[in-house]
Amino acid sequence: MHDVIPTTTGSDRSLLAVSLACFAVAGVGTVAVDAVELTLGATALAIGGVYCVARYAQLVDRRTLARTALGLWLAFLGVAGSHAVGLETIGSVTPGPAQATVVALTAVTWATLLAAAATTGFLGFQEYGSPAPADEADEQVLEGETPDYSTR
Image 1 (cartoon, rainbow, N blue to C red):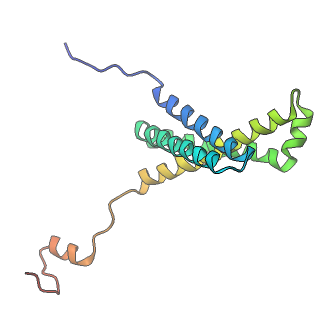
Image 2 (image 1 turned 30 degrees about the horizontal axis):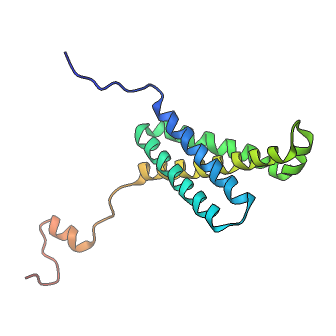
Image 3 (image 1 turned 45 degrees about the vertical axis):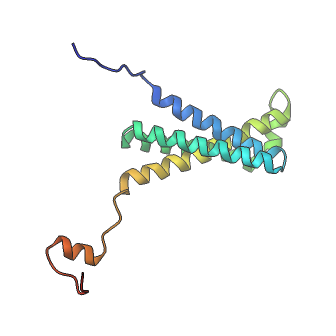
């Protein structure tokens, strides 16, 4: 009998959800009050969100990551359209407190923007992330040629 470590199906999505929550709280935290403490806290949350996206990018394949990035960019563009109308205008026509709607739309805007940028960045790292090209001297040594400079 083989020992297999069980994995939870869909556990990669929880990392994406945590990153979205971190980005949303970070975005709202800097909008309310202009204080250094809130900015530092929001920065720490944003770093945590990027870490969760990085872990998510390691767990899924390129196709899934590309679809996630595309979906997040489309969601961001949809939410960004509300800024053209005006968040206060939308808040005044929706039921409930207008300020709550403004804060919620701000949180969703920041969450989708930062998550879309992070997933796109990590997709780029997966697609094009190869080691830096060797310089000419290293290539010559690898090919068996001697470099132009003398070695000891």
